[in-house]
Amino acid sequence: MGLTEWAYSLSESLLSDPLPRRWAHSLGVAKRARSLGPIAGHDAELLEAAAVLHDIGYSPAIATTGFHPLDGARFLRDQEGADERVVRLVAHHSCALLEAEERGLRQELEGEFELERPDLVDALLYCDMTTTPDGTRTTPAERLDEIVQRYGPATIVGRFIQRAAPEIHAASKRVEYRLAQVTADGQPM
Image (cartoon, rainbow, N blue to C red; front, side):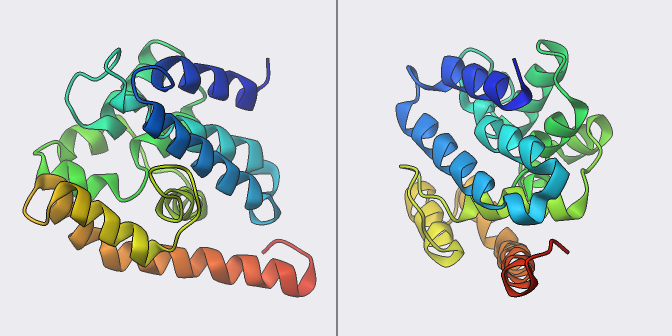
């Protein structure tokens, strides 16, 4: 079984029954990641695998700290022996260090999981922040608004996402620029 087939199977087993909306979102994020193949190059499979797995830490079967990037990454590392690059992408997806800081878990996250290459971190963030909870496409601005509305501006997630907004927009612009460059000359940057 290849990396992406394994990732889809694992994510489905953890999310589809207990959290069908989270599963739909994960499928949408993975579809978005597939569309970034021209800029992901030889890391396209890695990006898609991380995309479909990014939210497994929400699964009641593995959630321990209540912080899904950390729970998901620990499960992938400790129980699945997953590719360390996939683990790092899951651990640090969508500005997770800022949310970890809000939760008092930043030192744990940083201490256990190194950051992955910045272009891949940007790409996964872009995929997540351009996909609705139901798995359809959206803009980063609409996604940020939806998250604040769903959780509330004064909650941990609401505070974190508002702090992360400038980086989310900057990362999205970097990815869109790279995509435009590929479209313009047919070659990845």
